Length: 143
Figure 1 (cartoon, rainbow, N blue to C red):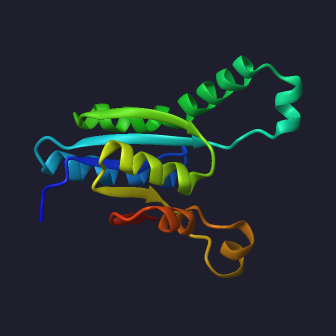
Figure 2: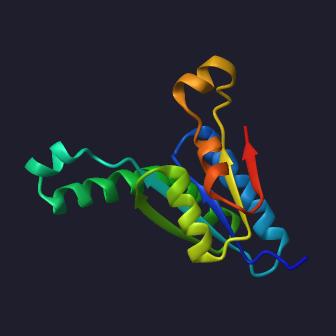
């Protein structure tokens, strides 16, 4: 089995997301040359909004919100001395994460989970389940 050189961490700025980043940083410290890619996926705004708000303003909003969500993850990686890159994208999380895995050649995905199981998970949807549908590399869920 080939060594993993890149790991993708889906980041939303939540405590569970920070735990996932810390876990990935630990993996990267243990493996020489591994890069942690921190990805925040912003939700698309509806077409009704884009009819009235300039694209530059929408893009700026996504960058600002993505930067906020990534801030603690960047700090965790920097404090751990782990090579990392940050990415912000827009769309459906699972689909975007799948695209980034392929583009970056990531050998694994790590993401936090808020632990909504049962009825709550079904009603609210699950980003983890969405990721499973689009990613064909190992996925680690951190609670």
